[in-house]
Length: 251
Image (tube, rainbow, N blue to C red; front, side, top):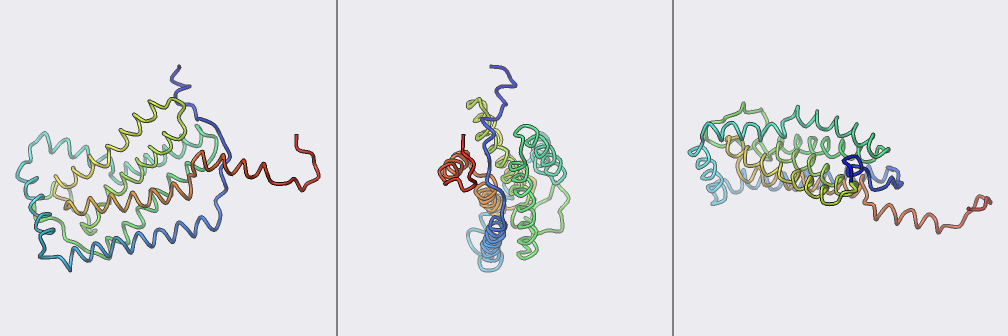
């Protein structure tokens, strides 16, 4: 099988149009995720400031700082760049254009934009509500003015690379290659999360709940914006069963 056929879409089935109801579900879900994350963040920052969980967070950060090496510094710098703001923007633009060209429709491209922009919006709201200080260790990156909770890099990695993995698994003809590429995409958030903790930019709980927040938003985006092939086939079957009211015979 040729490379071009391996990457060919499984079928250009019709997708249901985005509606006002879709927008309402996205906004409502985003609000719920935001409220859940600020509840966790404020609890950790204020209600559990002297807890064993926070002490463990600090202990892990100090352990990573004590085991830094020039090689790991370089590798984690690369790991951070995988979800840096400029990387996420550039990759999103590329994916939008590639998916539109490859699949011949805008649905997956819109899904990528909603996944990354929605995650960014939720992150900014949460970080400007929680205000958790960065770990008390030397920082290997410039500390942005945002809160340590949650990790925006980790959330962006989950949302963006997770969306890419979903599209590849659903659309590529070559199933084994699709799953291999999807697995590689799923490794990126782990690399980013470890890199951010290693470099002293986040606590372990920051990257954990950044991943959870990004994952929840990705799930909402996939369910609302990028319905599965099974969903689309079911919609087409239901449409085919509807009686014809136009008076024109159906061939």
